[in-house]
Length: 178
Image (cartoon, rainbow, N blue to C red; front, side, top):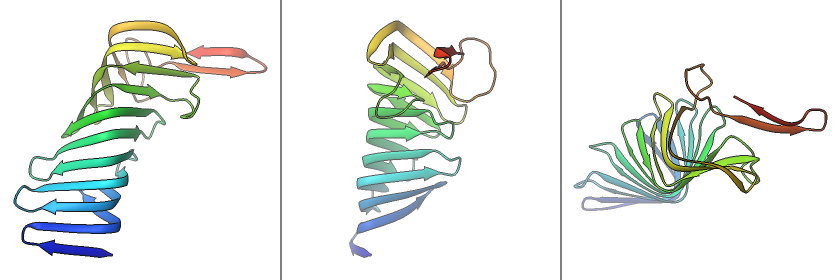
């Protein structure tokens, strides 16, 4: 709606929509510096990828020439309903490097289980994640710690540990599947 351009800087505000790579990005405010090839998005950002991924953030910086992306407070939801929240993230190609984070496939507001970790590496194309200093929680009770843990995020069978599934029902009680 509101687009201005001064020399090498283009700014837009009020429900900005950007088409970048294979994603549609909606933000409150955007600035593009043509000389630095830097796109900065701010305010209630929603990014939807062509493979069904959904990302939410309040601040994203995209270097359009190198395709490097930096996120502040990223919330990521995969097509398999696995969600992840991290305080900071960096994306290069299909690989994410994450800081302190939480991951789960349960209800976002009150997850039955969750895993927190200090840092990780996520390959979104291979749907594979490596995490460091991981703590597994049932509700808010820590039940497991490991300095390193790697696992697939898709539902395909693979060797090694599979992503756990927890549940509770009145007829079956507590349930754990892998």
